[in-house]
Image (cartoon, rainbow, N blue to C red; front, side):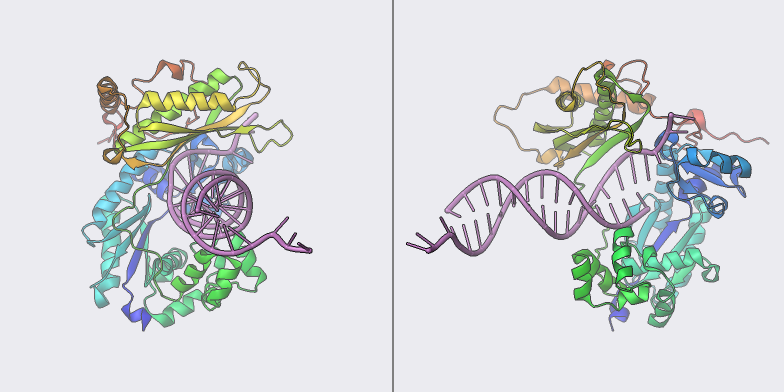
Length: 430
DNA sequence: TCTGGGGTCCTAGGACCC
DNA sequence: TCTGGGGTCCTAGGACCC
């Protein structure tokens, strides 16, 4: 049987992760509705159970629910990615002592290979979950299944139904069938709104029905992706366990502006900041980029106002991770996309970004016949990185970022970076 | 009157994820 | 007034080649 031979995979998923991180360091947040906001304090990207119970949806814009929040005392926090990133690292560190093979899928989810635990896998998962709770303070749920898709499904069941006490094991085909008959297709990993609509039109509404659909039909109404999904639901692994993270292909730094940008100068300042950050990220990962895309656009939610968007692309040769190269290329590209008068063309741009593609390990960068030898540049960026690493991000920036910084993203409700800044350590009253 | 076919590469756009 | 950011993968279709 396929189920018997397929290796058990556990998915451990942190509950309401960003909210849980905040609660670890601020106990007053327990028992009340809490939401964490997106960049620019625009919408809710994480919600406590109490906030979900009030009907606050994922991605709900804050300005539309101010009344509701006031009425129910909803506590809103700006996102604090420095804190969440560090807490995520701590969770993974704990998991390492529970399995030699991990596939870190996202900031709050990790697949764990449970091969070799036999009948004890459920108990092992429960111990792992308890250890994460004790050592990091973060609550989690665990789903176990013969494929990644089924372990995701198991995790969903563990979160939804308290009967599982946080660990749902779907290795048994009968239990699995019972659960799958009760899960709507929209909750399955890989089924988004478009696929859900197509499947519903075919009369397919539950995970069990999707599993039993002919593979060829899956391919026909979807693509090979949907066909693989159906196979995964049948217990046939099609999604690789990636314990070694694959080489990343692209990288982006994009931000909404706190105040709309109306002149080319202000836009160029924001683009300079984004390109600077993108170059830093490249160097941190030991990569160089071959293609740079700049984009900026007006507010798409204001259809009554004139709209404009541009996304000029520039090739970088030689491939580079140098701040000056990327800033020069980005600003030049942005200028190419700009139309009209530099002091203002009648448009208010609300978002801009820099996207890097064709990434390559720095060591593999192709040599160029006439490659300029620029040892000073390398030393300069090294010094720049060292200063910003030691004294904090943006201690030293290019003057081209400007001084008024009116375009910077809003984050007015951010909690302290408790675990990564000495000056922001939590204080304890004895 | 008759007007190829097959292959590769690249890109834009869609769909999905957290 | 106020609506996130950062990724991956797949496909269709055009350009180009022989």
